[in-house]
Image (cartoon, rainbow, N blue to C red; front, side, top):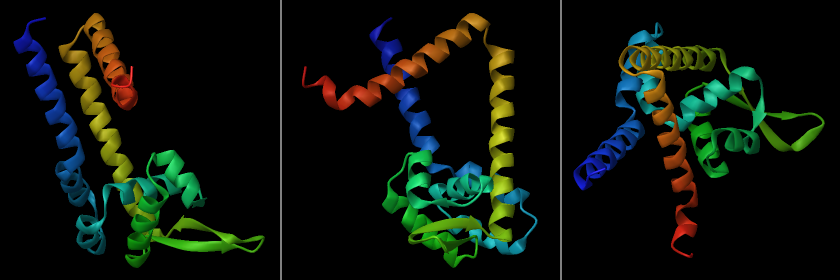
Length: 165
């Protein structure tokens, strides 16, 4: 591989990661597909973590520790996002009668609506990506893409320890 090819791949991969963090197109898609005017006003104020919390709660009540582990975020991040979601009446914080120490989060009807549209957006995006892969890449090329993404993920996970060797 030439130095120019390597730099092009790195630049495009970094751009993809940066765009993935902004999520503006995803929020616009969600807003367009909401039927509730109340939710359309709220959605720009909800964080990406907040949307993922709502989707995670579709399976039932969960505490902050469980949500943090499932979403691979800090407990503080869950707590901040959950407080905002609670203020918008998208989730409620509960305590169980047998455990007064831990709080559990549950969806409100409004939160369930937003979670459903968020899930639909992900399903739509997945479908489009699958079509792209099927229409533009051979099976062998898809294997290379998979290997590259796995290798890049492992490199990122080991990054802190690489310089110590």
